[in-house]
Image (cartoon, rainbow, N blue to C red; front, side, top):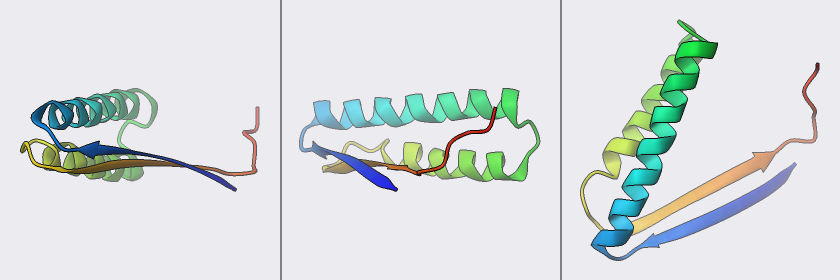
Length: 79
């Protein structure tokens, strides 16, 4: 398994706005995909709630850090 990580320091209102827009976009994408791909699945609802909490946490303009981690597994998808 390989890990990749990127951190974004939020130390201005402009940074805060950018982080909020990133999380809004991710939330919207997951919401759209979960409606079309996994409609009614419990795990899709849970995932959406988790990203909604992230999106809502970024609404206030406060300093912080946004860290994104991608864990790549050694497995491949089956066709």
